[in-house]
Length: 185
Image 1 (cartoon, helix red, strand yellow):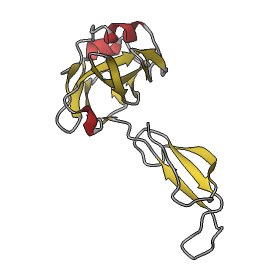
Image 2 (cartoon, one colour; image 1 turned 135 degrees about the vertical axis):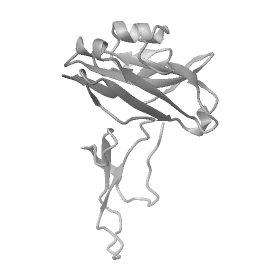
Image 3 (cartoon, helix red, strand yellow; image 1 turned 90 degrees about the horizontal axis):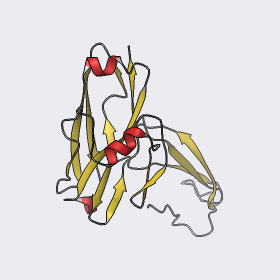
Image 4 (tube, one colour; image 1 turned 30 degrees about the vertical axis):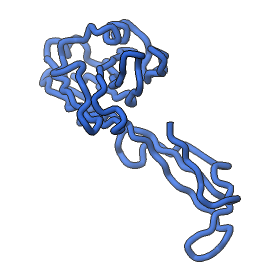
């Protein structure tokens, strides 16, 4: 959890806030927070400011669409905070949408469906170079989704969502955002 606060007492920070869409192209929406009584750089003590804030999505992918005929691969890189270094990680998938679904004490950003239930129980499709592992000393990791044309052709028009979860013996610890992959002809 991240708390966003102002360092200027009485500036009205947070009395206005709004989602602003994906302004930086990372696939995750940002949000703007206003401070209607904040001073500006010209010295006007009540000019007001607006700041844009974002989140670390943890999971980045190089593609969000894949052609069924050509197949291909999606490079999945994940960057958990360093506090997750050495923790186990696993891929979780959904074929029907974004959640949240509470699982093992954490809200995962996926809809619970057959694919979700399979992957949280360790029954993953054989389309990943790795479906689980251990985060490196920086809390990072990666996997490849390798699209087989025969498997993809039966799924033209479908959008799958995936996230990466870190966990320990007590359950899930942290999750990434859900990243989509739409199968095109």
